[in-house]
Amino acid sequence: MSSELDAKRIGDEKSYVLETGSQDSLPSYEDAAVTAGAPTEKISPLGYHVDWISVIFLNISKMIGTGVFTTPGSILQGVGSVGLSLIFWVIGYAFAGASLAVYLEYVSYFPHRSGAEVAYLEKAYPRPRYLMPTAFAVQSVLLSFSSSNAIVLARYLLVAAHVEASTWNIRGLAVGVFTGIVLICIASTKWSLRLSNAIGIVKVLTLIFISITGLVVLGGHTRVEDPRGNFRDSFAGTTSNGNGLATALVKVNFAYAGFENAFNVVNEVKNPVKTMKRYAPISLTIVFILYMFANVAYFSAIPKEQIRTSKELTASLFFIAVFGNTKSVTALSALVAISSFGNLLAVTIGSSRVIRECGRLQGVLPYPRFWASTKPFNTPLGPYLLKWILTVIVIIAPPAGDAFNFIVDLQSYPANVFSFLMTLGLFFVRKRRCSIGAPASEFRAWNAVIIFSLSVNIYLLVLPWVPPEGGIYAGDVSFFYATYCIVGLGILALSGLAYVLWILILPNIKGYAIRQLLEKLPDGAQATRLVRVPNGELEEWDATHDEHGDVIEVHQSDAHSRVKQS
Image 1: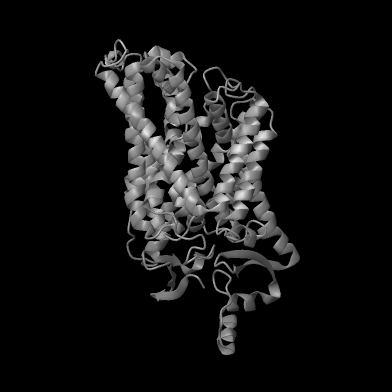
Image 2: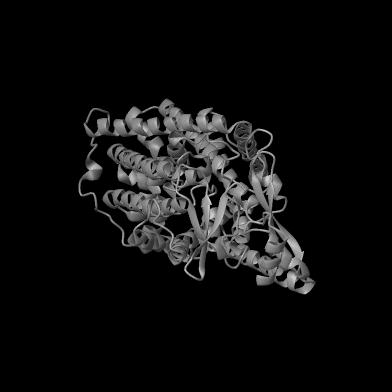
């Protein structure tokens, strides 16, 4: 097998399975009763192209999309004052840091499992068997499109090129650009990561330029007349409207989304625990510092009332205020387009690994060999193709307006549900490790940090149900504002019903049980396929297959003994 499995006895009743991935991290200790799941790939079939630089920029490129160029105005509108707006960016950093600590503890337990949430949820909730992988696979696969990012990218490209935007040239350009990104990712992991790193550097330099320009403005060396006006009595106008404050906090939290992207490719990182512990927090902190300086720059050059009421890009207002010409706005549009391209590239790389893990995880998707395979370019071809198909469909098929906005919103709520479950599940993983006497891990988050992260997750689950100020039809769609929440929960409920039918009812009626069978591919990849084992053959099957469904070579007397014991 790709992972060395040794069953150990502790006391009279407890047993555990020791999984070693490679020599650069400590082994994983798991309760033998709940260890079944996707096998650990000791040697990554996708290679080890993700170095510390790629870890930093995979996160940075996903965090820095268009949010920092657009959301400062809406956040200011929500909170009412410059001072509180800046404080909210600090709070968002604390939110993201708490969630990052949860990911770091999980990766210290399971250092050779890519896919982040999909792997961690499997380990946190092994019972009922196959339920969590099934539910997560339905949500993550069906809603894995990146249509909104592609549409934003197309719009900025047209603005930068001074081409009039229409519905179909935006959609056509979005499909073309996203197709190019997917082809790059399919062709080479190494070069797609290098391109992501290069664009990440451009993003950082763009924000550094804005930040330095803001400091120059504050120093009184530009055409801006009163650069410190917004910072006098900076808390004047602070709102007491709960909905506005809550919405602003959600927008800030969304701006930091992406700090976890490198965890999706962690099995492609050498010395993963040490690398993630060191460089994932660095990437988040870099983004936080850039966000803060960029906001200071905006407030130094633009009157806050203009930021609050204008529907233009905040960054565009900044460039006009400082440089006073439309060429600067064109240049900014090009930089934002580059930023969007890098964001889409980083998201596509990370998302492909999530889909791959769903496909090879306990066989909950059909044709597990297809999803796990890395042929012919040593890249996850199947997941990339699926993501391309779904994204193109959502770009082209829905009419502009309500339908498109609804589909995009639909992605968020089930994701928030699983984020909450993953954070809560960390306590369950700890409890099981304690019960089997497993040694301390290389990282452990403070309980207060986990509770804080849980509180944030609960907040994000409750907030979407709070009606907007204009009433229940005042959301970004013309129908009931929380419809996407209801549909999202409906998808999860249907996943549960499918599980009950597939795993419980049909096997009981037809007299068989579901077991998983390990499949080893020529490229070194591994997957598990679910098979139907007649009830009369269960004892023999369980005696001759291990927890992952791999065949155990035993002597006939040993097999007979195991059958008798079972």
